[in-house]
Amino acid sequence: MGELERERRIGVCEVVLRDGIQGLPDFIATSDKVDLIGAIHAAGFGELDVTAFVPSSVVPQFADAAEVIAAVPPGVATRVLAPNRKGVSRVIAAHREIRSIDFCGIPFSASEPHNVANLRRTHAEHRAQLQPMIMDLLDCGIQPLVAVATAYGCPIAGRVEKDQVLEIAGWLYAQGVRRLMFGDTTGMADPRRAHDLFVSAKAEWPDAHLVAHFHDNRGAGIANTLAAIEGGADCVDSSLGGLGGEPSAVDQGDVGDSGNVATEDLVALLARLGIDTGVDTKRVLRAGAMLETIMGRPLHSRVMRAGLIADQPLRRVV
Picture 1 (cartoon, rainbow, N blue to C red):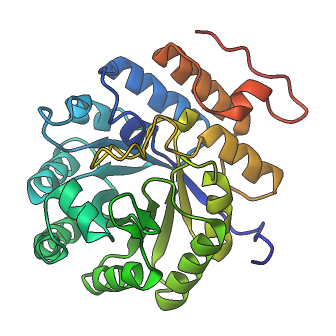
Picture 2: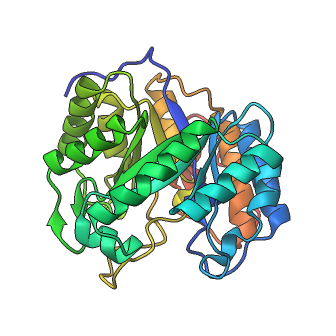
């Protein structure tokens, strides 16, 4: 692996409001979500993953999807999640009636057993359902962002080979998808494989916008993110406080509260490396402190405890 490109702008998408909180047992007040959006926006993030259009009976956390969408400031690229065509229809309605939605995430596990456990669809069944969803989104000006999950390994099936992931990505590209995410669903990636996957994908589809989404269950999340950037990732995902991660499809004990890469730690390191993200590191820590206050406990950011280099640690108010 070579040296990181310091002059290339790397997008950082803050995912705490969707991936970060989706598995929490307690509902986060809508007013707190709106306050977090304000703090995250003030830190300079250009893209937010803000909610999911799923039945509130299944995920009560997103019962306020419409109110949260409405609170996103103009000019911020807005990403949401919809796992099926009914959800996509709700996304399109919100796009037309509330505010523009830029990207709609759709999950697709490279591991077929995980796809069946998570979405109750085989790959063939899922492809058949995805085609009209992708068409519906493109027809109304929303970019489908298909997340190829378990891109490095699966807690059910074990190792997932790169060719499996690229075959799915190629099929998606042929359907018109130009934003492709490769997700390390339960922290099974390593930097060498992460770099190799993004190099191969960028060489195959140079006009595609590649998104890296790593979980930090085994402590390699930031190393994998740097490797993906070096390999050609255009955008990387992270969550304030490292909050969230993959809800367990099966009881494997392979997930946890510290599943996501901590935004505070990632943007601080990228800044130290001279990589342009457009994000203000001090304001990120303020947003992280706000989240810890909302949660009523410390989270998993190391920088929140140690402080930015050459700066005093922020006083945490909980």
